[in-house]
Length: 346
Ligand code: GTQ
Image (tube, rainbow, N blue to C red; front, side, top):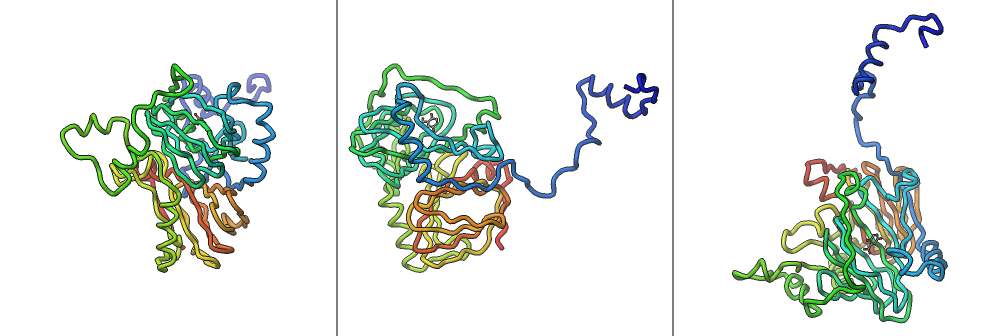
């Protein structure tokens, strides 16, 4: 351009274009490092009623035979086209009709499911069949074979949360289909809960063989709800959280998955939490009651099964319009593993 217009290029411009041609970028052109996180995802709420209605309308046109899983993805408005809820997490709501089968497969993305409605659905994970009843949490670690079925009468809907965007960023995506539609069962029902779900762990020299593919796969809502309910009734309230318990993998005492943590929270009617922000990105799901959330200066009213995405470093306060229970997931384990987890209590 300079030659055409007769204006001489400045020496630095010449150098920079030479640098770019050599595959180099001048860092002096880059904005400085940020003083604090500015998330690529934005606060967003999703109406369960809207998702449910769309899935039921989609079902006659989209059988499980035609799609891998019948899911509507919670795609963040600030990340349009990425199929992502946040830079590390994928979330979607899945519909399985009575008699349908979501065929067996496995993938390098880790998954968990939180059931919304429908009795009689079940998962098979690593050779064990588990019920999926409303409020249950099911864990499907990386590379675990899994399929889903439904022997009940009403549609089954649940939330799927996977670390899909993280695994894509790390260029580590693998997926395999099983030979048959359903996997062969190798453990009687209740095995993993007896081994890991009673505050006890298997012992003995055959540990490894005994526990291969076995871990706590299902956290029944009756038990997790009773736990937070009891603590709430006893007044064990944290001003920032009410009662908030984390689901743990009893083998490690840590989160249920290396990249995804899950929690259940109880708030007595009328409680307003003190403001809190952290570097974790969370998705909240109201499982009972009604919650008004103040997030990043905006207010959201969340009814049954409505969901709210809380980006990194965005201040959150919750007000329980009446006694409420909130399930949540977050990417906290990942941040903690690399020393990036931070929290500021207001
Ligand atoms: O049920 O295995 O929402 O593989 C997305 C990908 C669910 C599943 C999703 C999956 C699944």
